[in-house]
Length: 44
Image 1: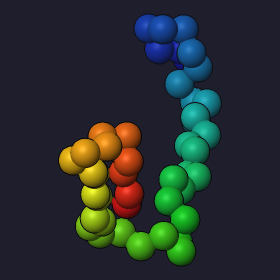
Image 2: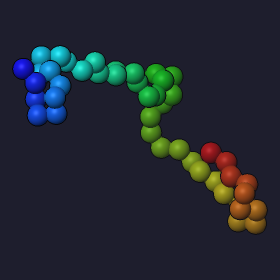
Image 3: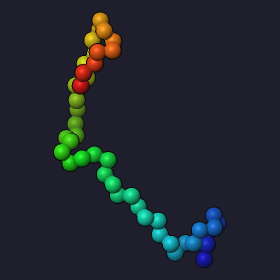
Image 4: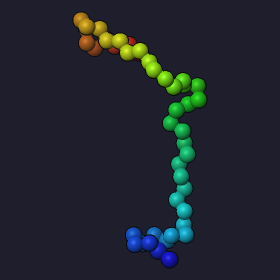
């Protein structure tokens, strides 16, 4: 049987479970610094 779009309803979509963040990268806040005199100079 098909749904209204025309796809078979018994076929399941494969979910992409790829994680976006590595385990080594910690979550949380970070510090962002920008120079007042030179706007292009930034640091994290």
